[in-house]
Image (cartoon, rainbow, N blue to C red; front, top):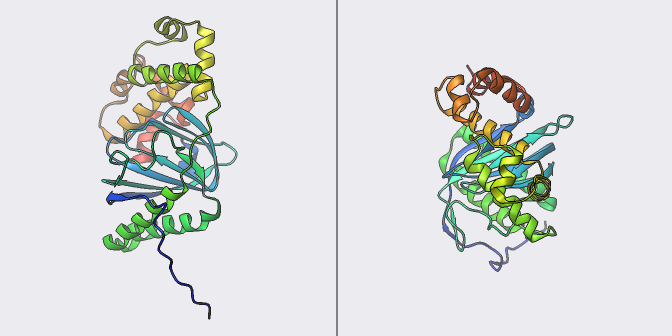
Length: 282
């Protein structure tokens, strides 16, 4: 028998001023992973996503990341994010949503600072992260033991926080700042009539320079980003409201439902009506 003793070491542990409260657990696989969940945010909820299989492309806070099995993704409260699986690879992922957590030095419902990477590999912690995620998923879906879920969540938060890393920024800071400023403008005005010429005029640069800076900073073109922002808001409205598809189209900037349906299907893979029925299980 080999007996091991715990050595107290809190040098790198985050100070939890208030523990998180688990809201939900879900597992994405199969058909679900084929339909991207485009630009959306959770105003009072933090999410930890763990990719156990597959590959994807995720936009988090205006940065594009090529993701793969073993990666951990952090969505701070209020952070816009976009999730899409690679067509030939798919994704199997766990998603843990919680609220109320407060770590010293960070705003409420934040697990990483603005200077930290929200995507990182689990490496040697792969089995530990997957095990905690699976235990949480089993408990909330089968046993529904609130006390066990609470302690498993706190363990997951501590483990993930120890794994966070600092970014390696190599992009020209001026180009980066312009790209992010344009992104923030699109985030707030996505339903307006925007094109590359209008954006270039608004920011007093050439269309080529604006497009170059935006893609270097965000990872896609301004118009592609705007479309995904519109589709993300449309998905949220389809899931959370009873608005008609025509009204949803109007709210996200499309005055012709037929054009909206085509754009939605091109991005998500199915028409908006089908997406609503599938997502709500109707």
